[in-house]
Length: 427
Image 1 (cartoon, rainbow, N blue to C red):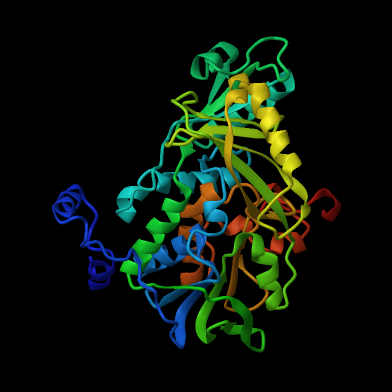
Image 2: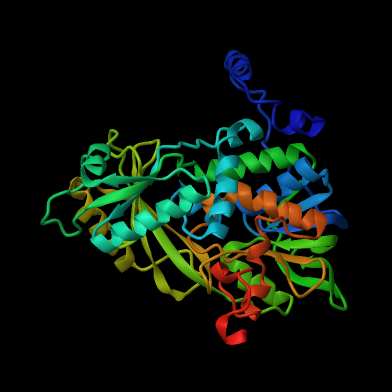
């Protein structure tokens, strides 16, 4: 470990360190990361101290050896969408571009705690999609076939198999949402959302990255069509390259540079119940009902549903959406009706026009964008950071994130059309 890590993090976390700490009342543990003061110039500035921004900074330092990096966060680490989601991790998409992207991330999730020397509590308990009709089951079978063609794990399940996995589901033929089967990715699961931010922050700081909280970006410094730095609430900071990584605030921050993005920001809510004994062993999702259910390590049932369906930057949502999500969850698992909700929260999701992210260059030189994650931001955290770091370090996209360029919208393409050649009307 570096001198910085030893001073601020108290050294490497281990069972032996915990035992030594217990003897001394754990007084030796220092801060997990420094409260850095901004320097006049950095090789790379990452705007946004959420999971994606911190992961980007970490992989810039670890993989590419670029340690003169600053992460600028207007609030505090973990106070944005990273701490305001439902913790689901999976790669079971249908389009090959999205499959490769999220599978790249899932592979990193599997070794992330060891890599960061920080327990992110990744739990591969399985991610199950329910099918409620013949049409649902056909779509799930098609998705499973597409996943297996790319080498991803997918298993189509009968109604009896689903019932055996989640016995509390309402499997009666007269249920509000009858269940005919499901599709499971057993390598999927959950992770502790705020621990992910803390782990990446600590690891990036140990490699020399400056994490600067309470530093809001208010503008960009330009030399013609090139971005050379940022204006902040703590002064002007120069940079060789600047990466925007601010989730639901992507449109606002890009607007400071005169860019208009194909993104709308919407509020997405979730809530958790009082803790109970283990009752749901896997992540249960339904796209027909648009409800997702899992049980946290503390025992609370975590529930989510639809966004508010109108643009908003608020980190609070409408009560009717919580009522809808609760009603849908109870229809699937009737015993949830006995539980009390103890906490709710909202994140600001950056919804792109084709439902897929943007990772790459902008029309301004040395200004890059990572955004448009819609519902999929948390599960992509390590993969997004690794790929964005590659793009910022080399000035060119990795093969995995190349299809997710901003230019596809100007070309009139959706993500499943990228690289497929001219459209019929253009031939």
